[in-house]
Image 1: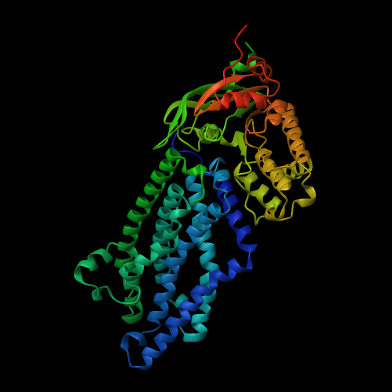
Image 2: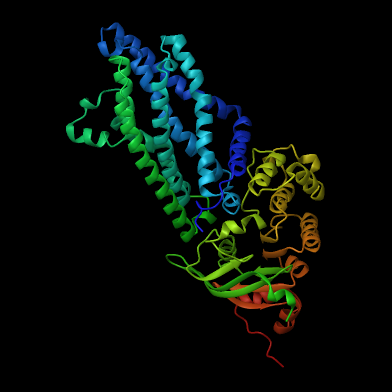
Length: 270
Length: 252
C-alpha cells in the first residue's frame, strides 16, 4: 500500500508542529532572527525609495513599490527558508533517524513543515509590515484580497522549493545544506522583484515567465502603479505553482526512495 | 521445535544489501522468536547496523526479504512501525527540548493513549521524574541513555531494536539499563535484537547470539553452545575467534 493511501493523522502533524514550537520558544535568538533580516531589508529599501522619490522618479513615487516588493520577496524567501530550516533542525539534532522509524508519514512531515513556515513567517513579517506603516506610510494590509492572492502564490512557490531542497538534503546529507540558504536567490533576478519583466533580454523573459513569482511581482506593480488588480496573472501563477509543487513532491519522494536505497537515512552528517 | 519459533516476530530470508562499491549484507537468513532476546555481534563493518536498518525499513534491501510483525519491510512498514521502536546512543533526542516535551512529541507520533499518564509511568520506571522539565541537552550521558530508552519504550513496543544500548555508560549505569531491559521483556513479552560490542552484556541478556562477519552470518546459536563449540570460557574469546577466522573445536 502506498504512503498516500494510508490514513492522514492530524495528531502526528500536531506532534511535529509542537516539536518545532517548543524549539522556537526555547531560543530568544531564534525568535529575534526571524524579525531581524526582514526589518533590515525593509528599512534599506524604504529609505532608498524615499531618496529616489525625492529625485523625481515616477517609479519610486508609486505608493511603496520598493517596500512592497521587498516584503513580498520576504514572503517568498522566508516561506522557503522557514520550511527548510525546520527540516534542517532535525539534521542538526541528529533526530531524523528517530522520525524515520516512527509512524510519521512523509506527507505529514511535509504538512508540519508547511505549517511551521507560516508560523515563522507570521512572527517575522507582521512586525515588519507595522514598521513599514510607521516609517514609510506603506500599508501592505491595505492590498486586501490582492495580498491574499500574492501570499498564496508566493507561499506555494516557497514550499515547492523547500520540499525539493529537503529531498536533496535527505539524499545527500548536510553537504546539500547550502541549497537551503542559496537556491532562492536564483529567483531574485529572474522573477523581477524590483523591476518589470520588460527590462530583461527577450530570451531571459521566457525563463522569467516560467516562474510563478514573476506573475506576482508584475501583479503587485500593476496594482501599486496602475491601480489595477490583474487576476489573470494570479490565475497563471497558480497554475504554474500547481505544476511546480507537483514536481517538487515527485522529486522529494524519488529522493527519499533513493535515500532508502543508498542508506543515506542512516547517516545525517555530511 | 520451540513453539515460539513457529510464530517468528522477524523473518529475514536471503537478505542482501549492496551499496555502490561494497557488499554490506550478503544473503543472510534468520528468524527471531516472540519474546526472545538475540544478540547481533560482529566487528565494525560486519553489517549489523545495515541489517537493523533493513528491519526498521530505513534501508531498502537489494534482494531477499524481511518481514517484521507480519509486514514486509519497507513496503508495508506503516502497518507495524507503531508496534516497534529503536534505541541507539548514535541517534540523539532534540537537545533543546525538555524530557517531557520530547516524550510528548514521540508519544503523539506513536499514537500513545493517555499520554500524560504514560509519561509519568515511564519516568517513574526509569527514574526520570525529577528531570522531566530539564532540557535533554543538559543531562549526563547516563541520563540521556535513560531518556532514549524512555522514548524507545513510550509505545510499549512488541519489537525493540537496540544498537549498543550501553555504549559509553559506566558499569553501574549499564547494569541498571540491562536490568530494565530484562524486566521489560519479562513483563511485556517483547522481542529484542541487540547489536553490541559488550560481550558481558550479551552473555547476560541474550539467549541467542548471531555472529556476523563481512555481511554474512558466521555462527548462530545459544551462548552456551557457542562456548562449547569454540572451546572457550567467554563470548569475548569466541568473538575474537570468529573475527580472526580461527576454526571451531573439532566436533567430537
